[in-house]
Image (cartoon, rainbow, N blue to C red; front, side, top):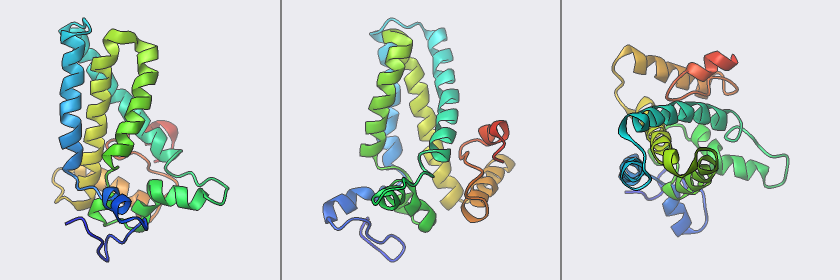
Length: 198
């Protein structure tokens, strides 16, 4: 099922590493839905957060994710370090998606990588928000990430219905095929409008 095909050629010589570089879309909700629920529940049941402010912190986390998504895509994902390893770094991180735009298994980030980044971001937000509000806020950020990955998969491979999703698909396909240096938003076009990259 996840073996190399003409549409999904190997990226790594090591077959085990290459296998784990291919991720079906459903791996993301399987990994992240329990973490989202667990983080929100931990905030309420163990950290001392209350329900209504937790819902607000969750919503703020989703909103902050949209800016994180835009910023990471505009900067890190489209950065090729001027080094001998720079082109390979860029290809592994994001270039493979642009080169193999229809590869279903190289569209969502492998959970090992996204969880590693998640730990770093959680530590940063823990320092900023403290031991109570970081849990519902971070549950919102993870939900935003989940929505981003599912939206990204859907606009590439789903039968898109509704004006909003059709606009997102057109926006994202324009990024791929016409304006690689613009249109960085995937789950929303908000930040492209704010920063003039629409």
